[in-house]
Length: 241
Image 1 (cartoon, rainbow, N blue to C red):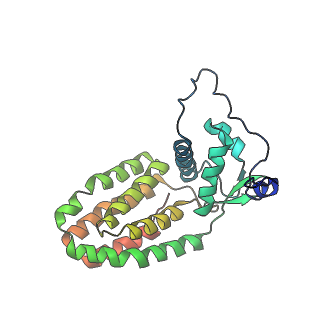
Image 2 (image 1 turned 30 degrees about the horizontal axis):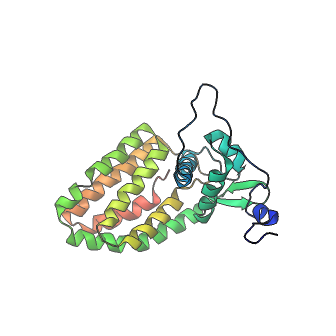
Image 3 (image 1 turned 30 degrees about the vertical axis):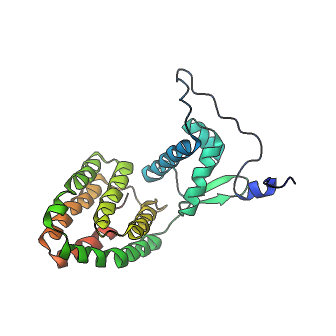
């Protein structure tokens, strides 16, 4: 084997096909997209796949190949494969050698464990911030809470999931600890991956969950530590997209 060349066996072990996979032509009537940087395409594909997961378009337990997903997204298999490898790192999918990637079948227990870890991490931080952050700073986060509420009213699971994470990132960002925000955001994202046996999320559940954001801002501005802690713990175990 030529030095630096990846063997076919290694490619197969990562769920990759070893034959040439040229990008598919654009659908009839659709102009070809402008050339973009590879990392930009990969990022766009990753965003699209995350949205598909949140919306339930990628089903837990199902196996998807990079070429097939590439056809659906109008890109070659390579950026899809790279994006799916990132999702595998995040725990959303797993590699199936010679076939592709299987969406992980998560359990209610795993979701409960994630909620517990998030509470252990975030509750002490939020209680500290409730004691130190001026009320005016909490008011600045109202637009983020309103964006989440609007997505909930529409029943838009994917947008709700992203808005919910943006709101929590902004809250924790006031602590000034970038590592904390990164770790908490990863846990939050993992808690949003779909469950195989979970019934479809109702719009009313999303609306109720989003309303907790406004209530939490009220409690933080008032410095009501008991209500802050109660709302955070309830939010972690409530409706999730």
